Image (cartoon, rainbow, N blue to C red; front, top):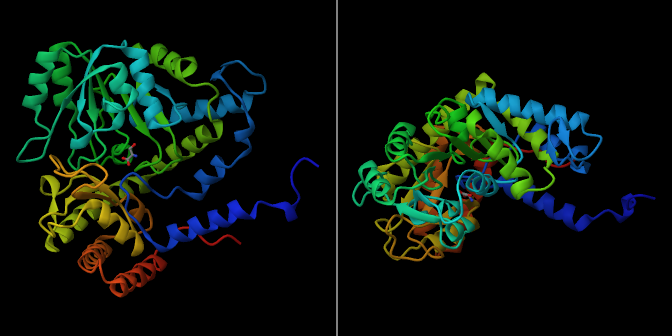
Length: 418
Ligand code: DSN
């Protein structure tokens, strides 16, 4: 009697999963870091590989029974190296944060100086936030976006690099809507003798699909998550030059992780395969086209776009010109009521706290997976504006909720559970 019988099935959890499937199917998913994985990616994630321990790397494991797991992990490594043109890959990080911390552990020492983008100007917690281990263990110095154009200012980054002489410069963002060119980071890193790490968590799918420049030829190390624009399972990945391969592998295991999640590794391999298909290029281009269309439509509705717009999959919307009283927190809550899911976000130099904010972040990877295009982006902007204008009118919000459900019904993602 190894498992509970069918009558003892956990209906509570599976009932909740059904509810979440319903939420994803009937609402607009506009969180810039989310996406809908393919059924194949989900099948690999839910496979028998979840049963296996495999500390080590292909051909060098601490447990028996890993011949198949070795083949799977080797396939994932080969595919991702080919996809990005990398010399070495580690596909074991459980997340983007784990990947970034493994890079610091492997390539620099506690107390070393690192330069990264400030979290409140579009960086990430692991780029030196004082409340994160990166900021606690390493001496991070932050650069910020320019006061008027709200874009990266390479003169400022160079001045800081010359002043602080960092061991590493971290490029990469989580809420910066503009294209990131790797060359200027490389030039500054070379000038001050720093390593260059590029965190492409948000844009990995855009890079893989050729819609954004690939930093692999310029960076010493590239990290990313596999579940955002790349449309794979939740997880992380590190690409390096051959020179840093051994240090990075050692920093992931045994340095900072134990047993790898081989079901996630298999799902990553599936996602890399999917990203190699010609249709993925169209997908990546359409994400960017949709973001531009949505940004333009939002600006016509009276919102201000941070930096004036977007070249990526996402935008940061300053709510103040639309309604000076409206906060990101309130917007997120009322838009949830209307079936529109996004997240509150600080705008650069935001007078409000990160829990309240004067902005929201909006992304197009998930709605693009559904097949929505420019005409639907205009509708989404209209639904957002109508909801926020009528935020104290539940009937008007319910009307938008019905329109959102009708739109999503035309672009179904996952069929109902049989
Ligand atoms: N939580 C991710 C995001 O939303 O950008 C970053 O880790």
